[in-house]
Amino acid sequence: MSDLQQLAQSVIQWGALLLVFALGIGALILIAIYIIDKNQTTQTIRRNYPVVGRFRYWFEHLGGFFRQYFFAMDREELPFNRAERSWVYKAAKNVDTTIAFGSTRLLNQEGDAIFLNSAFPTLSAEIAEPQPVTVGEGSCRKPYTTKSIINISGMSYGAISAPAIRALSKGAGEAGVWMNTGEGGLSSYHLEGGCDIVYQIGTAKYGVRDEGGTLSNDKLREVSEHQQVRMFEIKMSQGAKPGKGGILPAIKVTEEISQIRGIPVATDSISPNGHEDIKSVADLLDMIDRIREVTGKPVGFKMVIGQLEFFDDLFQEVHKRGIESAPDFITIDSADGGTGAAPQPLMDYMGMPLQESLPFVVNALHAYGLRQRIRIICSGKLITPGKVAWALAMGADFVTSARGFMFALGCIQAMQCNKNTCPTGITTHNKKLQRGLVPEDKAVRVANFANKIVYGVGLIAHSCGVSEPRQLQRKHIRIIENSGRSVSLAEVHPIPEVKEQYSSADDIQKQ
Image (cartoon, rainbow, N blue to C red; front, side, top):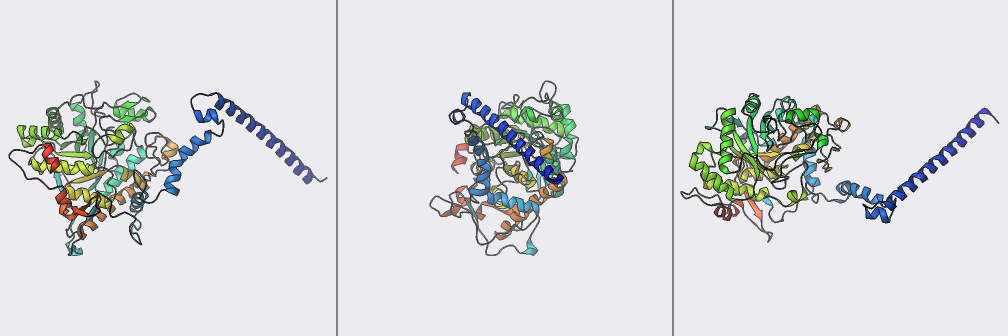
């Protein structure tokens, strides 16, 4: 027998021994798992079906991914369907966003909007840039003027990663839109892209709190000295969890984040469910006045609309004090918003959706004669041009989006935002997972998405016969009723006249 044959025979023998050994180890592992499953008492399936019962939980985990890629139709998925996500991905990559052979959107669904094309659409020579809007004019030392339409909604550093913040900041700077810090405070990553910043003050006052956890004037001044910080937003509530404060799991509280927020490392960051120093509309206006006086910049508040009498109380108090006491803006968050950790009962059942709350607030401002004084920002699944155009026509001055810009960063809707396992590196602090998110590349996509939104809204506006998006009005839209027929949005939500005896919230809602 030759040396080569002996070597081959030895390899085969050793291979067989290793295979037997591996099979033996595998058998022992299976026996151990069988014994563990048979004797554990927490999971019925594993106890009744040892070993194989474990596949049930694996398949349950993978089910969401299989449905997304293989079984769900283009318009079926929630919270965002494939058609919407596909448009955002294409827009972010700056590739062709046209489609062929007809829309997959059902055009007779109750509540859906249809824009009314003009017999005389706006010609290319008549197209205008979006009109600039000033926030805080006449009320503060440093009002903010911008022509941006779509902006980045509040996502805290901590809830999302440093590479994500850097990409959003740079992309926002390139597109000329603002970025909201979220309640987690201001980091160097927010500033490095050169974009305008809206600083959000949450219930825990992260970043502007003293050692006792209360609002600090000195910290407010320090933040306001950054020229990029253009406005301050008091967060009363948010779409994911109205009535519940921010939740950042301990695994995401790194040393850097603990320093920015002023909380211990590796401990759950649970914000109070409300501001301890804001218990009434009078307190809210006092807080707005304080922050505006200290910073010299526009101040407003963000909330999910709930109890409607709040606006009667607020606007009556404004008229009692004087119109200069009014908030400079109101950010309306939809009940179907939210990306991070949130209790399901609140996410599923609490608060009003934007389709109802936006027209209500705009009408209330008109009824109280405050529409020109208070600007409206709105948020809530507005990630395509049609939905942004609807919000502008309804009366919003600006639109903000969180999840739209997450998709632009590469989010695949893996539903892992509340964990530290985001596969695209957006909502995780795992360095290995963050490696896939290259800020320099993703910043370009962020800017592309913002620009494509403005372009798409412009297409709708020009088809309606107006020269720029902010000229869209309710008369340009019809709403599908349950009969399948449509009715003018201006008839469904007529704008009330200013009355000497101001309308109540119930009257405004009826209108």
